[in-house]
Image 1 (cartoon, rainbow, N blue to C red):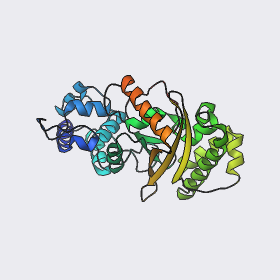
Image 2: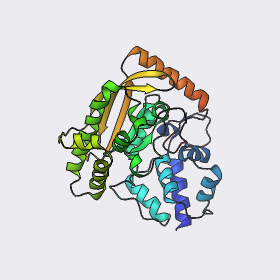
Image 3: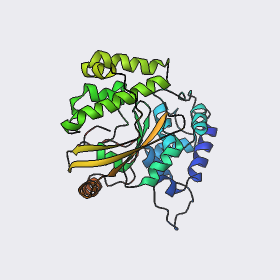
Image 4: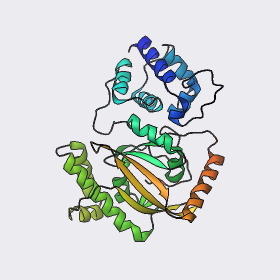
Length: 295
C-alpha cells in the first residue's frame, strides 16, 4: 500500500470536482472549489474521520468495498479507479463480471437527472448505482449479494419482486427479462458468469425454463411499467434505457406516464424528504425499509 501516493491522489481528485458535478449546491461563499471532505464522506457512505485519515496517509488498508465507494463518490474514470486500487494494494476489479463499477460518465448523468429516478445497470440487470429519486421509488438495490443481485433471478425466485407489478403485466415483464438475458448470453459467449446464472435459474424455476426454451431475444430499450408502490399506490412509468457502446452498462430512466403518476411521484419525494433528511443519497446509502425491492 502506497499511503502517501494514495493520500495525494484522493486529495487532488476531491479538489478537482465541482459540487454541481455530483448534484450538490455550489455556493459562491465556498472556501474551496472542490468537494469538502464531509461531502465525500456523505457520497461514499463512510465517516468523515476515515476520509481525513486517508488523505493524511494515516489509515489502515482500505477494503475493496470502500475503494469502490470512493471511486463512485469521486466520479473516477476506469483508469483512475484502477490506479486507486493499485495505490491501496489491491488488484483492480475486472473490466467484466460482477465486480464492475458504474462508469463515471453514467454517474454524472445520474446527478444531472436530479428528481428524475434513474439507475445504472450491468447488462445482467445488476443495479450498480441509483440516484436518490430511484431509491425512493424502488429502494436501495445496490447492497444485494449472490444471485439476488440480478433482477431476473429475483423475479423468478422471489414472489415479492413480482408482486410490485400488477398480475396482468407479469407475463410480459417475465418475457422481457428472459429475452434480454438471452441477448446477453449471445454477446458473452463462453462467459462462465452468464452460463452459471442461466443454469441456476433453470434449476430454480419451471417458469424460467418454459420461457428460456422459447428462445426469444430482445434488448430492453424503452417500455412502460406499472409499479405498485406501498407508500403512494399505483404508478405508471415510462422507462427509457440508454446503452453504452459496448452494451455492458445501461442507464435506466423512469418518467411518469400520466398526471396522476406525476403527482404520486412528487408525493413520494415529499415523504422521502421527511424520512431521509440528508441530501443526495447515492449507491452506498442505507436502504429504506418501506419500499419494495424491485427495479
